[in-house]
Length: 244
Image (cartoon, rainbow, N blue to C red; front, side):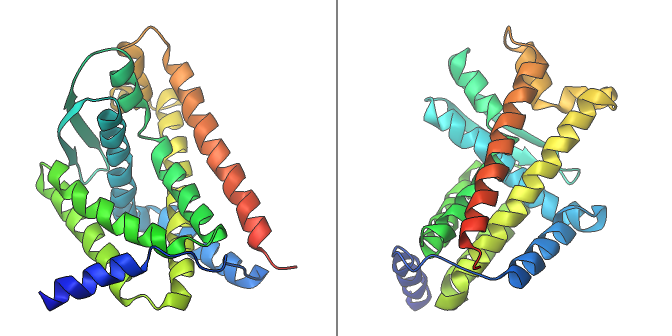
């Protein structure tokens, strides 16, 4: 019980506003380099990409819940594939749920970066830890369960053991990794439609096109607009946090 109380107190203590993060050029370039090394090379993406896929599928799940759909569960494969099973009225709710997959890692990344800009990095860490715990109820296969458990465990450890002065840096790093991972996934789905059409059945844009009267390029354009906006806004916030 003492362990749970320590964890809960750490979560609650995160809901405070601190001074916005500021930095010089060298540390942010170092962090961006590390984030690129984790998300771009295939060797590291093989593992970190599973977390990005997890966030992608959670985007589908929470979008489904927003429109009153019932989420039966989600699965994640070692090949970074994912599947969300939900039920509800066809039409807008199904399209809304189907859209919010590819843009979500970049969107969450931008929100985490923004939390450090506005001084809510510790709150973002606490909220993220709680969301990852709740997400465990959606998983339906062993790969997804392992990814969720490890992500949730890391989040809880970060909440409890990250020094206060380092929390903003941790949240900023997580945000950058998700942002870069989201951009990487966007290029991946664009590549499927352009040059690897044998894999097109795995594309959310293709699935949305088969379930609506709008073509796949419309949904791809939507992905590009949202992810692009996240990159632009994140870049602006990083520039504002950069000390002259």
